[in-house]
Structures are given as C-alpha cells and as structure tokens.
Length: 128
Image (cartoon, rainbow, N blue to C red; front, side, top):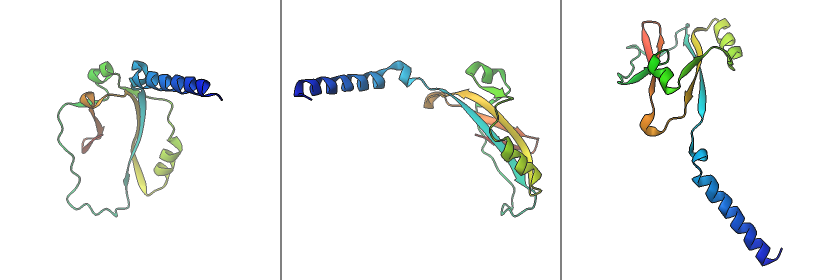
C-alpha cells in the first residue's frame, strides 16, 4: 500500500470510529429481560439466627403497577430460559420453589434507575 492510500484508510477508520462513538443511536440503551428463581432451603443449614432483614426503600416500583407499565416495565409470561433449573429445584426435595418469573425493562441511566419490589407472600419482600 502506498502511504497516500494508507492515510486515506486510517482517516476513514477514524471517521467511522468517531461516528460510532458520537452517534445518538449508539448511546441508546436497550431493553433487558430479567428472569429470577427464588427458592428456600427446606433442610435448614442456615446460619441466620435472627431472621432476614431487608432495606426500607422509598420510591420502589411494583412490577404490576401502572407506574411500571408507564416506564416500560412489563411482566412476561413466556420465553423463560430457566424452566429446567426451576423444575430441578422444585423436584429436589431440598428446596422449595418460591417464585419463578421474568420481566422486561428499559435500560435506564443512573439518574432514572428504579428499585423493583418483589413480593414473596406476606412474610418477605426483596428489592433488586
């Protein structure tokens, strides 16, 4: 390659790189699917003596709420990828499946992130 052709290639490559980095489309976050399996150990073995404690949080989002839907969060009832694992947990005799569910949410920047409330019966609430 001659130096002139090499220089054009380098300039073209740098222009492409700048375009990719500065493009608003590239800065857009994508949607995420979150699949969770919650289970408990029914055979004991836990060192927790005083029970579980969870943080008290303000402005949390319940997945079934209208606010969640407005923000683009939605519970999904199909497309699960962890069914086989959930079945193994449920059938093991060592664990009790508490909940297996999945939702989709938008990728949010740090200023707009939301804590999600996950209720598992009346005894406990987890925040993710």
